[in-house]
Image (tube, rainbow, N blue to C red):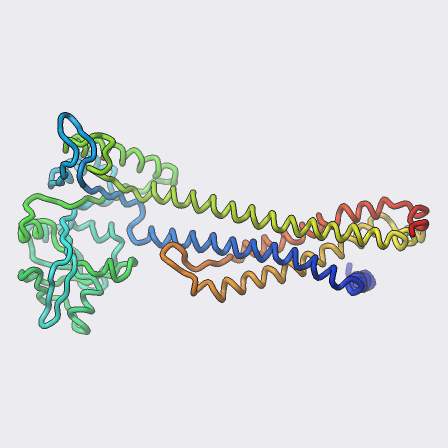
Length: 414
């Protein structure tokens, strides 16, 4: 029940000690402010990590070859490993029932491409039909590469949006001839990629066509796989680890590479890497919570000390109240109300200040791994609940001591 006299007493007590109450409030507000900023930073890191992994489809497994760094079966280190079509075909045949999507790729960078008077240097990738889905691209005009394109070595191309804007400007490129290293390819599609311009500076060609036209033979640059979805993340992670291990042993054994030589044949599994990043981010956010909570505790201790002083100053008043029949519960409620009021108002100010700062500076403080720092509504409400509980805890010990004061002792206090 609302008691106006009780609130008048609280405001009167605060007005008598403005500086002391202000400094106490600052300690609480600063604790909440620091907690909100740290949680916002943690959220920004999480958003940045999620943005990095959205560039490709979930659960992508990429395999590439390089130079060996270890001697193996009488062969010296430093051998350059070159993948062939068979390196792609064998795993697909062996693990086909586990795969959702798969593709090999034959790449070349810095290739001159032109249309009419416009030209530029871009990358082409000879790929299988699944590759665009693996790369998480979206075809916005025309179509993607299909099985018939590979079967009949069609000279068709799916171009990125940046190439479309650079070379074709406002013209519809579908059906037009794009010249790649003096060879004409018919544009059949345009795609966009969440990775931005760098990812959209590529042209996708049928793998068989790229190998034949550009003298690649049966060479491939790298391979990509996506496993079928599992019911739980734990199942997906376990299968991804096993597949990565088995695939590594298979390909390294086939190419005469030491089983643990990741330079000769390297494998990147986004499911495993995402787990590492999310675990790291979780630890960082828990640390931020710990720092913020410790700061709040320091403020709460300050409030508790101030309430102890207030109880000491009001000992005689409390004794008179008890002599006139005030119950211990009413004494406890009087002290708790003042403690909760100070911590809640101060904490609310700190909360609003922190949220306002994140809203103001957040959009301008972004980088590759730090995006949109913010604190969601649930966390804000949780913080307010923490404030009320903290205020109650800060005032409970002083209130309990006040309730235990004997009237005769209190009236003798000077």
